[in-house]
Length: 95
Image (cartoon, rainbow, N blue to C red; front, side, top):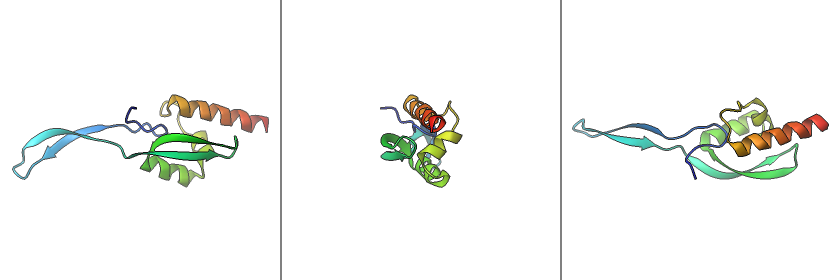
């Protein structure tokens, strides 16, 4: 499993560990990924996603998974999230 958020595209970053003696060694900053289950109102089903804590706050702020995916850019989303987005758009168009 890659360490990339399925909704925001946030992945590992690199930087330095800096000691008290100012020695610098390379390190990785990993995103805070969590396995969560989000409910889609338009489809009436839940989806298990691996998203960052910041991504989960963004979903809550926008008012749910459907609203978040409607405004999300396609290049940031994973293939699973893109499929969910297309299914939601189809369900809303037919309703």
